[in-house]
Length: 115
Image 1 (cartoon, rainbow, N blue to C red):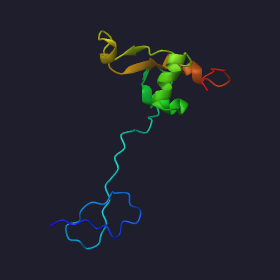
Image 2 (tube, rainbow, N blue to C red; image 1 turned 90 degrees about the vertical axis):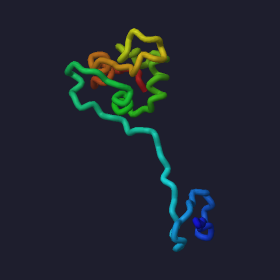
Image 3 (cartoon, one colour; image 1 turned 120 degrees about the vertical axis):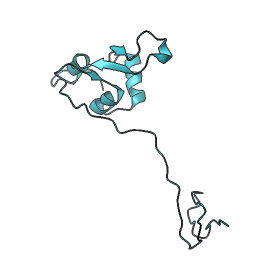
Image 4 (cartoon, rainbow, N blue to C red; image 1 turned 180 degrees about the vertical axis):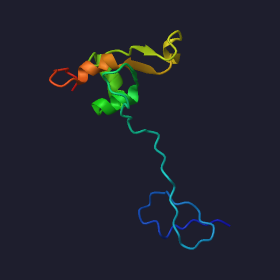
C-alpha cells in the first residue's frame, strides 16, 4: 500500500508523491520545462548560411515572442524563406534568415534600431 508522507511537507506545494517503503523520504516531482536555451550560431556570420529563431534569440538576447514582435513591427527583417515554401501559412515549416540579412544589423558602429 502506498502512503504519502504529508508530515514533512512544510511548504505545502503539493509536489509530494507516494513512497513505497514509507521511510520518511520525501520525493518531489520533477518540473519539466519545454523551453530551450538559445543556440549560438556555429559558423561565422560573414559566410553564407541560414539562421533560425533560436539563433536570433542568442544573437539579440531576446525571447522567441520578441523576435516575432520585432518582425511584425519592422525592427527585424521578415524571414528570407521557410522550410516548406509552397504550403499555406500555418504549415510552411520553420522560418529562416540568411546570414547576409542579419549580419548588417550586428555590425559594430552601425545604428540598427534593434533595441
